Image: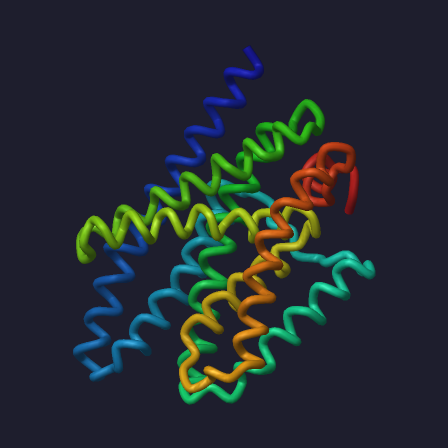
Length: 254
C-alpha cells in the first residue's frame, strides 16, 4: 500500500510539474516576451534569452511551491571534482576568441541553467527519490536517470507548434543521449553545478564561430570523448560504489 501511495505521489507531482511549466512558460511567459519583443523592438536573441532565463525562475518557483524536490548545489572538494573543473576551463579557453563570443556565452547560459535545473535538478531528483527510498542499487539509479531523461526528451515534442517533426525527433534524441552525461555528472558529484557547467560548455562551443583552429578542434574532440567515457566509466563504477547524489537523497551525506 505504501509503495502504491509513493508511486501515485510521484506521478501526480511529475504531471503537475510538467503541466504547470508548460502553462506558465509556453502561454504566459511566451505572450509576455512576445509583447515585449514588438513593444521594445528587441532582437530575437535577446527575447529568447529573456524567455529562457525566465524559464529558470518558473522551474524554481514551481519546485518551491509544488514539487518541493531538493536540488543539491554544494560541491564536494575532491581531487576528482578539481580535475573536472580544470578540464572544463581548459576546454573553454580556446573558444574565447570566437567572433560571436557574447552570443555563444548567452546560448550556453540558456541551455545550462534552465534545462539542468528542470531535467536533472527536479525531474531526475524526483525519480531517484522514489526509486532509492528503500536503498541503493545501480539498477535503481540507472532507471531513475533513464526515466527522467526520457521525460525531458519527450517534452521537446511541444516544439511541434513551430518546428518540423523531423527536427523535433532529432532534437529529442540528442536531448536524451546528451543528457546521460549531464545526469552522470549530477549523480556522481551530488552537485547540480557540474551538470550545468557541462551543458553550458556543450552549447557554448557548438555555437562559436571563427574558431576553426587545430587547438579548438582538439578541445571539442576531447570534450566529446569525455562525455562518452564518463557515461561508460560511471556505469561500471556505480555497481560497487554509491554516487554522492544517491547518498544525499537518502540522507547519508550532507
